[in-house]
Image (cartoon, rainbow, N blue to C red; front, top):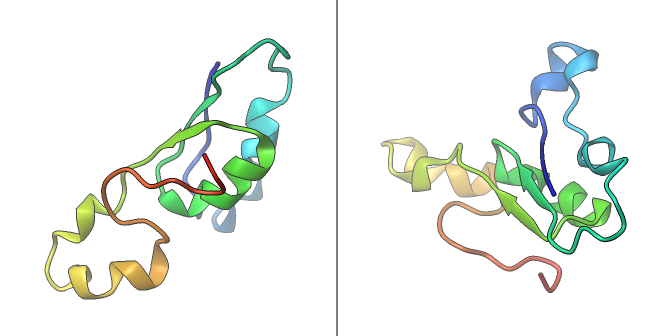
Length: 89
């Protein structure tokens, strides 16, 4: 099963665009063994795991490669680059 959510911060501009992994997985069949969420920012990871997804694919941070943001991205994003296991997944 593959689902997607709006950007993590979109709800602050318009509540109708709130990023909601639980809503994205709603209606998934019980036999979906792999549940993938496409989420622009890694900050969705906690809500993604809580909703029952097995994998989240994100970008947004560009691996912290842009100066001077490379010094600050870790303060805002839980994961900056690469594969990270979260909550045992």
